Length: 251
Image 1 (cartoon, rainbow, N blue to C red):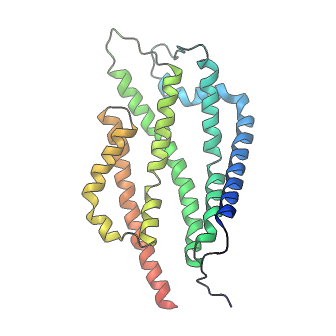
Image 2: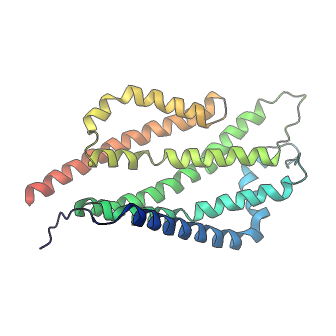
Image 3: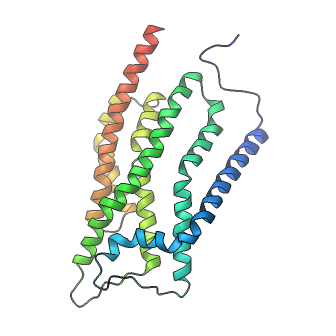
């Protein structure tokens, strides 16, 4: 006889879990490789698209390559990043497939909304970085350049900054999901999180300082959305708690 609130699956050994984890990793690597091979022929156009927010502000209208291999390796590296980026829904789904057996039935009902929200928020964070953050910070850097200096960034240095900001904003936009998970799991309550708001605000600026270029503009552009997303997470967490209470009362 089975219960609706069934216990997580039991009986698997550590070796079974490791084998299952290896299978998930191999599937993720395979999907990334397939997408990478399909995009590799478009490596240069992809880099031109990513570089457009900065190139549009440069006096010469182009960047430079200070290393002979940069003209090949930099678009190659970007294409690999784009392949990982495009594979993110599949990767997150594999993560769900791996942890699902350890969840209770009620917990599993929350996974699909969390999964969809995670993917959409990650992509939203990357889009926010490209369309909002890049034009602002690149305008700031180029506008503050001395008249005696010609701004000609290196393509490899530019890509490192871009990827760093993409991941920073993509992960920062996952804050509502992480907050809701903590609340629904009973680790923290909305009220306790609200009381920690001053520490969260300071933490957001510390993270912004660590993940962005060393200027107050970039730090604030990451810290303020993180704070707003934290508030959204608390709001959604309160709604999830009320819904769970109503569901438990009706059973």
